[in-house]
Amino acid sequence: MHKAIDVLFKLFEGLMVACLAGMVVMVFGNAVLRKLSDYGVVLFGGGITVSEEVSRIFFVWLTFVGAVVVARDGAHMGVETFVARFGPGGRKILMLATNVLIVVCCAVFFWGTWRQTPIHSGNYAPITGISMIWVYGVGFVASVGMGLVAAAQALRIATGRISEAEVRKFAGEFEDDLAETPKGRAE
Image 1: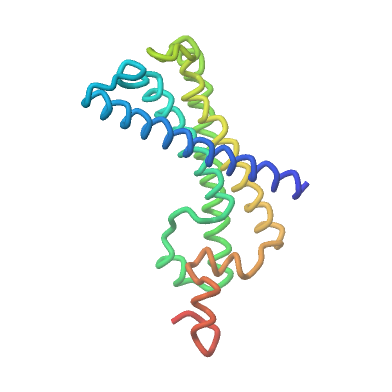
Image 2: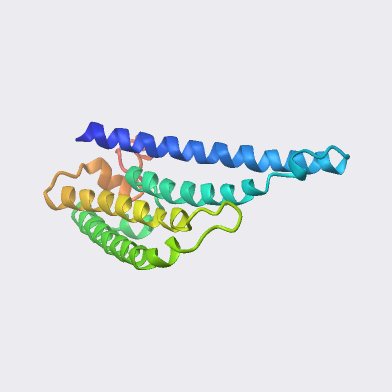
């Protein structure tokens, strides 16, 4: 099961790279074509109109799929100064509460995306003509992805399978910080 999840997240990372590369090629290509048209060399009418719309769609997907990947890595922003004031038991309780709140927020996000689906599937992008569900539908991917990550972590906390290193990371105590102090504790 872990191998399948690792493969899925590698695919997500590949999708992020493809979106970023596509954005760079399209935006840079359009900039070059527009600059060339300033000098009288007009190719593709001075720019590729579809590239502006497609690069925006890629940016949306890059952002939301990236949020899922970052959630798995536990790299989202947190309020570590508050969490660090608690001992290991309190940190686990806060970590569990945080993950439960994330699951609730993801459920609301999924429900909202579901409710908006009929509206967006009937709307079409003005230049490409693709259904706008391809833009707004990324809410399904993000809400399910982040919700499953948070639910899995909450389950590991509740069953006592969370490592102390993960709890320390949640409190902002990273291994590099711990190695610098002689007692092994962050100051």
